[in-house]
Length: 394
Ligand SMILES: Cc1ncc(COP(=O)(O)O)c(C=O)c1O
Image 1 (tube, rainbow, N blue to C red):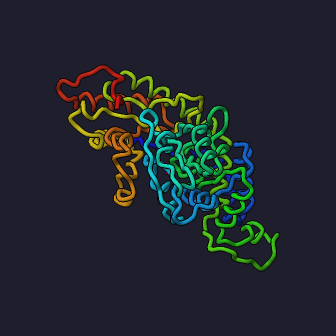
Image 2 (cartoon, protein in one colour):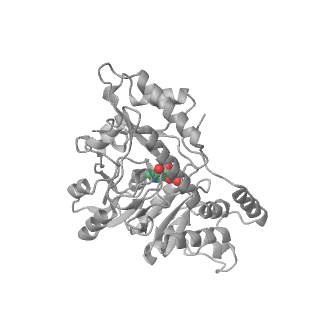
Image 3 (cartoon, rainbow, N blue to C red):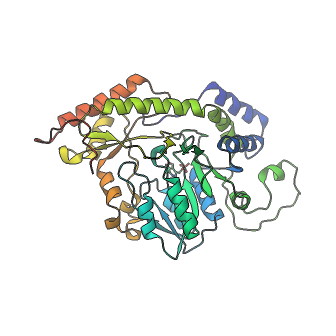
């Protein structure tokens, strides 16, 4: 089975994990600190703070921006459930705005329509690794006195008009889950230029103790400790950092390979009728190519998107689904007005994720595209035969 994602791990990560295990320091310690410094300097941001998962990092980012119970936060339905779940955990109210048809990124024009007196923040997701329209979101946030908190789980290595994602918003979250562009097994980080937000993240990620785990257990802080707030156990471990340090050194190389494979997919898919990859944003950007999402034309087929994915899997191709939009989930249905989310609703009939990871061979792309083309060809609705490139005209 060709998976939709697979981490790229070398002997360097393995040796560093072994050294970490032998060092006796497995939880938050010197390697975690080193990884944070490397990440901050790579992004050109004052603070990068590791967390146990991306979800934990986003929860911390939301709380550190002062989002309180009853506050509204405008976000996208085209995301993993963490993005909205952490808002509920903070007592906030997620308000869903629709996405742009070509990129499935949150649409700033739709966001502007739902801002109100209780709105406190905007939370875009850089879908698939393609940067959102940062200038539009910064204008909205500054114009209305809102925080811009970003879910960049897909976007490490991406940039917008020359600025790295992670150095633009008030606070940005990254995920280091094994499917992501950089993995630490599980893990995540918050990046910010704000000393105040960074201090809140540090306090909340370790029980609300006004002391870091490194100073406390490294014998560099006072013996006694003081709990000043009900924080979380969300700290980042040295084992995670041991993997991350070497992943970060290879990030550009891994992202280059992702971009190369994405280019090959786009070239090959251009010749296949009834399917089209997502489009490019009009502004200057570097895409991180976390996932390769394509859009089928269900009205031209006798089978639906789920069956296409099922047939790909039966052919040994681990196609994925990113994502079932949140406004269609049982939990979020009552909180959303689906009639205001037509693009995301329609995308749910069309999108599927094709395998993309750095260690994939060029021939894997051919195999995936050939299998998909064969499935679509075998299930074209009579009279719907059409040339390639017409699939995503929604
Ligand atoms: C868009 C998005 N947000 C948040 C997360 C959560 O990250 P993690 O799995 O590291 O908690 C993910 C990960 O799958 C994601 O894809």
